[in-house]
Image (cartoon, rainbow, N blue to C red; front, side, top):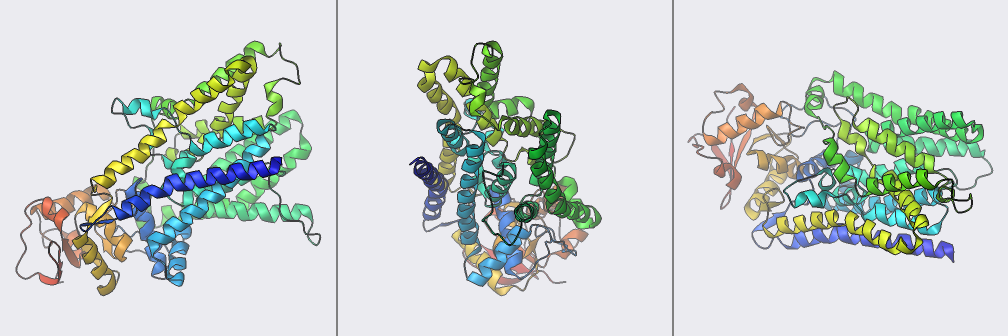
Length: 532
């Protein structure tokens, strides 16, 4: 009966998260009407379109990643294989890239939530606590909604990798990556390979862990760093406690991470430093951690409950018996403490990609918040329901605001979210008629959509994946303002075509020379071919 209740709970939460993170996309797709076409992304459309551009490379048969938002192709490298593989899969299945993206996202949500429940099932011995932690981690967020009333925009509104709900809403690789990370952090009784008497158990576990580690390196390389740091901390912790039988498991996982995920990570670092174009991209691909006040607000009320319960535990630890002691309900408390504590230290380490190390940080903090809640409920059992209502009433509003913000963008047909019908027709023509890799000169916002929908390259389209992005963006803007011409600026000479639509016309006074050849035209978009 208990197992059936747990299956039902996971099923209900999966349906809830899938519904809440999918209905806005369906609504957006239908809301375009006769004049607009939905671009496919509601949270961080810049990165969303860049993922679609990587899938387009796979659709074209490529396994090497080249920067689609940079005019020069370069040799490329075996990076972003997850999205390249999805592009190949979409082509083989005859499914659109966007549909493949979102179907994979839904599969990732299920994988993530099942792994999340298994993790908390190993952490908490009491069913009520694991349920509370699971629901909180699946739906919760921070107190950024308080800052929003004053015009603030904190990390819990946009750093999708840190929060499971936002991960489910944003893309497929965050849910898949978090699921793999959770499997590494879950004690082996939480997940075990199927029984096979021909292969010794320790070898089956090693192969299983190697596959997880290698997959994590492919899908979410920064997850390998997090896993190595936390599992190494676990080994140190258990050595201090002389827990040698359990210590072997963590050492085995570390070895698998080094051989599998570590090898992938080492290749990624080598290529992004040795290839000139990828090095230029990597140099500007900086993701600093949010300010400390932002972090504290974004991860409260979890921090408040954790610290409140911690203070109470120090005050009353001698008055509670071993049987009623709240710590007895959390056999894997060190895992939560190590993941949360070391994760916070990593976040503020002197490293240019700090924010990437926030991956899944809401999960251990949810567990620690439930530990704090349990301490408070043990001390004041009559306030248990009130404490639960207080926790969720503070943790849910930010995600509600995220969904409401998407509704506003949909109703106003925000230019980052929608293309006009004429723009969509022009891009379809480019995808069908222009042999890749043509280089297109277009407004910065149009340049975001072109590689994702046509497979053609642009001079500028993305703040990270366009090499020397700031200079290129200003150059493109000056061109459409009429300040420069292709013949006067060498980098503009690499363009093969000029896309002139509503966004380009809004930038200013581009004068069209008579010798530019029109290759496509509709009511509001004209595409010109530039002579060599």
